[in-house]
Length: 64
Image (cartoon, rainbow, N blue to C red; front, side, top):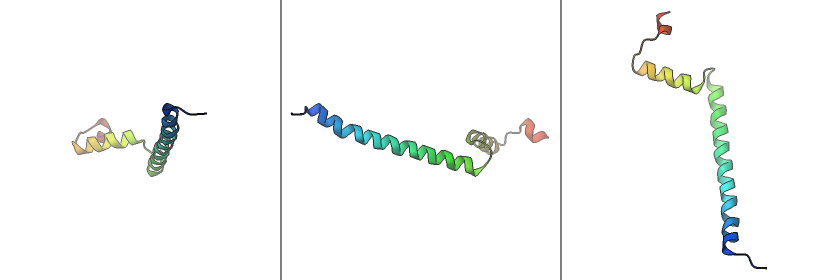
């Protein structure tokens, strides 16, 4: 039984895509775990605070 070229290409490409997707999701998981272990505040809160401090913005929180 002969396989078509399309089937041979699919047999080579699909495993590579699967390994790539697995590595990407593993990297996202490790980054997520590292962010959660560093501090109690979420990443977006740290990013907003960094931008506020960078631009010397005074907020209601600073007045207390």
